[in-house]
Image (cartoon, rainbow, N blue to C red; front, side, top):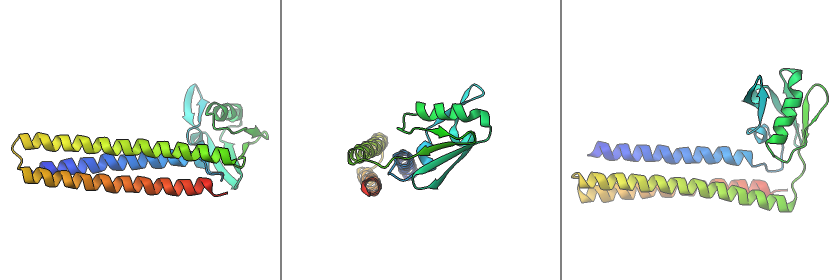
Length: 187
């Protein structure tokens, strides 16, 4: 029975960790005023008939804090890269100089910063819901084991362990959100 409890705890921890990784990716895509190649992480470019991530058709760099430069591997891709950036609806206006695509990242207005904080909070809340769902699943698995003969004490201890795990992951999500919020609101 102990092995089954350990398995439940391990798989719950893995699921909760996946929620953290997912949140990290989502928060990376929320821009905080400073140009970053990660801002274009969701951009897909039509390449020989199939949607391809931008970073696979060109080099994405940030020459300074307000500029993103995309140097395509093939010059014929410049219009497709511009189209991909516009389709991603990131609020950027790409320009090209015949060699590369350049994006000037506009400074964030106070209103836009507040919208981005709201977006970050929503992503964090989604992650918390995911962690709580993982807790519920684990507790249900423990209850099934209890019906199959697991002692009440062991079941209670396992539920306490699951709750401690949940609390630590929720705390980590809150810390990530606070960090992102400071980053967004810093002018």
